[in-house]
Length: 112
Image (cartoon, rainbow, N blue to C red; front, top):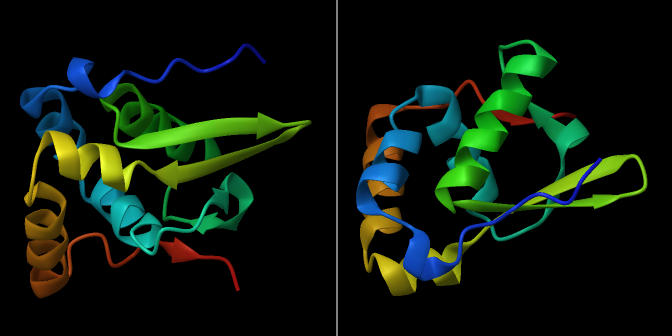
């Protein structure tokens, strides 16, 4: 697998980030990753096919919301919280608070 490209913070756009967060599965992934821990893709649970989950993770990465790294045959993902907070102060907290209040993305979680 080739190395994934991650946009630099100055390349992140509000429209790109908001567009990526326009899907409840991706908001759910954001909620799961908001604990600050790096997660293996296999730890993530969502009511979609693995290929669809991979697509959602790629959309988040391409927008600059997450960072993906590969280690052997395993892939790991983490939220780029500090970079997003510096680029768009308060945005993540507002999205996470609204998502929790409206149960957006609550069908996404971690495998037991």
